[in-house]
Length: 419
Ligand code: UD1
Image (cartoon, rainbow, N blue to C red; front, side):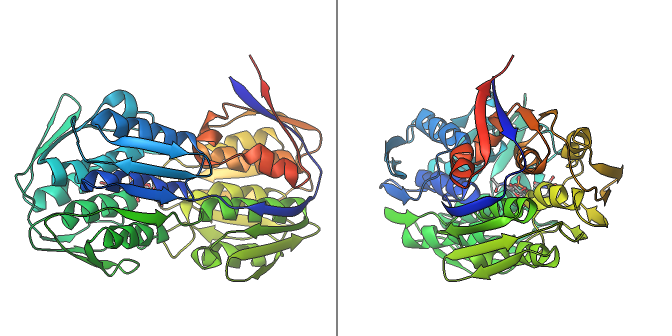
């Protein structure tokens, strides 16, 4: 199994290109199921989760032509097998995003329930409830969602809570439904907007993405399109946080500064200098950061996917910070690993109190989920001595070439095989 060996204590300097967004690429690839004509996506990130999803779509009959340079053409002319097996869904919860498109296009779908995951229960009841409101007959048998609908009907759906993939699933299903669908309390995440732009390029009629009311007027069929995947705001935020922690000066190219307002505000509060232009961000920092309190919440508030990385910054801050996680019930596992590096963190329910220490010390730690891994990488970059991070397959799910990108910025990061 691969591990990451980091020799800490070097400031980051230089330029790095941000990849396409994982959380946009996954729903966008699923949108190919909605059309009998090819969908070409550019700026595709090179990630394990993307490979998993493309494999899943191929099993369904989508023809995949992936070329070097981040392009993929997905041809959904013949969907032969509208199923998503447990073996696939258990490795990547976002596979649930095929449910809406399969049902809308094929009239039936059989998709495994995802089950639990490390960061919390993460049910998919709202995906199911929304499709049922659109007229689908849904049963859950032997761990599988079995859904049928000759043609989905538009409906007014008030989502009980804000769900990103739930909004995306229903938006895709509604694109081919009969009549108007109104999604209220919809997720406002930029990835939802990116999907809406692509669906509209395919001939859908989606309005209001980016607000909490999205309306979708169903059309009989969608056509092919070419779409460029938006930049990854979480990768961007991770590099910003890493530089704020190590010190130095880094320019991020191909980024979307507007999608990161809440994160940038907090990093400035911590003492980092951040300059934004249309598609670049330059961050510089020196000395110990100031402690920052924050609370995760749906977009545009502070993203849960950046909580772990900012916690690492607070670990070496000059004072005490309070972090509240409101999205997932078990998303502090990195705190236990950070403690192994000398961090002083107390957990109580969904709150973490972090007392900053002057420096962390390198140690062997274990990645527990995707963003937890990123927080440990940042911790390794600032710790004294060597840090060995095990189970970095979590990192490979969502970070494109992270050791190469960090290496180009002057970090000493190596992938090693460990027992
Ligand atoms: C997406 C992101 C993930 C991010 C999360 C929150 C993708 C592929 N993944 O995950 O990186 O951390 O948003 O920003 O885009 N919930 C229910 N019932 C449902 C659906 C969700 O109770 O049917 C709950 C979840 O357990 C969680 C909350 O709603 O507590 C938000 O989850 P959701 O937005 O759905 O997360 P994902 O879409 O899975």
